[in-house]
Length: 173
Length: 173
DNA sequence: TGGCTTTGTTATTGATCAATCACTATCTTT
DNA sequence: AAAGATAGTGATTGATCAATAACAAAGCCA
Image 1 (tube, chains in turn purple, green, yellow, blue):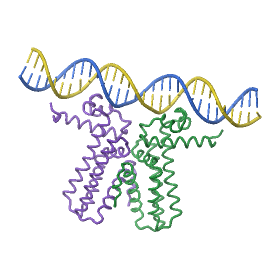
Image 2: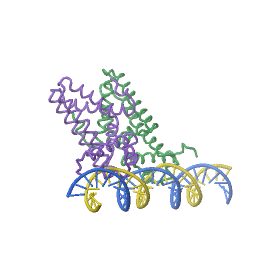
Image 3: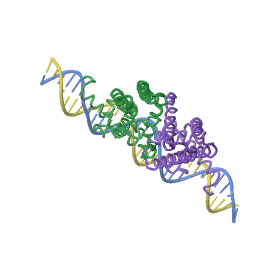
Image 4: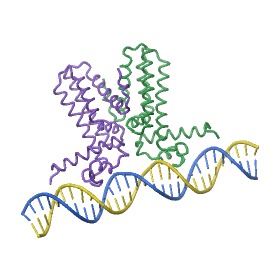
């Protein structure tokens, strides 16, 4: 049966979900493929039928987590009036943080992973988000759009750290 | 001979330096104590005479890297006139980034490590930096000091990511 | 019914690594 | 010079893990 078969697609997505959880909880390098398999209710070797190396599994997990941010932001940008744009994007990101904490933790980990494929994936993610937000700010007639985009990203990263370390005071203003 | 002996102190510092490099280059969990030892020109078991576990070695490395930031900032705050304060702190941080890249990479890694001792060390570091900067801004009569402190920290984190991923465009304004 | 594909498992392996042990050599002090 | 402390090493181990190989069951279709 072709790769686009439903069962296969679901399996792959289930494994990615399990991987995001386990990687976020114990760290990519310390996490074992056996832990991922257990979380996905399959045997350890079966993981390798879908992802031939652990690194490819990480790539799949990263792709899923960037997808969520990008698609959420795209929707907000399409549907929000210019004057509410920045506030709504911030709200949306905080929502993702709350609902999909593990995906953000995984992205944070991947910021310092030196394998070139991972760096490339992270660069793509940041680039796409930045360009989307910048274009939206410009479209909305925001003044100093580039600086506002930079500050938006910067606050997002601080928010990540505040959540990861349970230090809400870092975001106080 | 006492622990405050010169040779011992130097050895310990040498090991910490080696650890910072190796941990930053390959990641804490993937890095081996043998690699650290080799970088420090000693045998692998000898590392454990100074740090009885790998985690204690990471704690030592983190402490050293936070020390540098805190002491540098303290000096800037003592010696800089109020109107130049923020700009000089930013300059100083960029300088640390350039000169001690590995220490910053290590801090970034540690943001997502779940061991409680590591989290505590990271919280202490962030707390001390934040409080120092906030007090300095208030002392300098900066308006909305809390918000300015938050933005200062946020830009610092974005700077980290920009350097780690070689994406200078992230800081464009 | 019997062959082919898909889905899945058990068993295994070769490598890797933190940590311990047992030991040697080099000072220091009297 | 001899005893005790300090500095340091080689050898080993028990555990862990990514990845492979070999096999089995279930569905499908001609």
